[in-house]
Length: 286
Ligand code: GUN
Image (cartoon, rainbow, N blue to C red; front, side, top):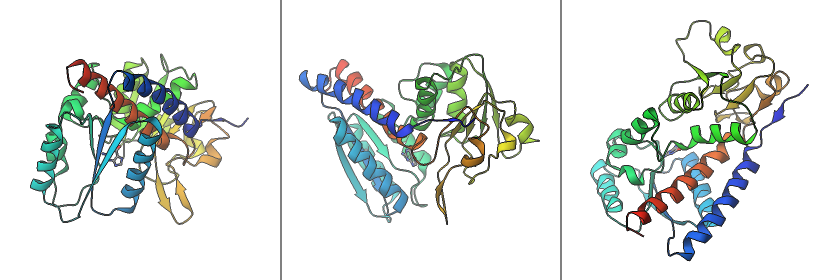
């Protein structure tokens, strides 16, 4: 039997609709959430992401401002802009699109963003809060994975979850979130011995490796839920880290690429921005 295809595009639209209702209510009490997106240089993939973020903000009623800086921007210039945005009370969320040109230290920029405006959830304060279970903003792609599992009624509690890939923006945070949801979590990576033996034990398998079609059908337990975080541009077009056509015949549920986790990242970013706006208003800022 073929798997349920988890529709991230539809789920993202549902969430955006819910957020639009919430933003309409907030506007009635004088709160308009505002997101500032900073893009340095002309990476085509980043330009598409930034455009999609703007479009999504418009749809939901969030004010969005875009700063496009040349690829030659210095670290000092970017830090100055971040500081200006930190001090601007009208700004609720700051997102600096990654990757940054090589003359700029990404960690220095992430550290400079006010943790209360860090809607990406990348600042070490927010990463630490995720670790101890007190996170206000958690990173958007991992949150999107958890949201999909929940909205498709896939039981996380008590399940064995295997995460492949240990990046700071996907593998590590999603492993922590699954743990908070009471899964038994295993975090695998490129040095894991006999990876297939590990992945075959997963009730929930999360792939965030960055290699096209890396997870093959023989690596998946029959009936598992498979969440594919990969976005790989190949000669044949976009594909995930999972061999979708083969794995969907083994899994009970699976996310496609595109229209899977990708659209959820933006929905979670908008949700974090609304959360930031509410938090700032409660502290007397609007
Ligand atoms: N580049 C790719 N994904 C992301 C993301 O979620 N946030 C930021 N800031 N940059 C990215």
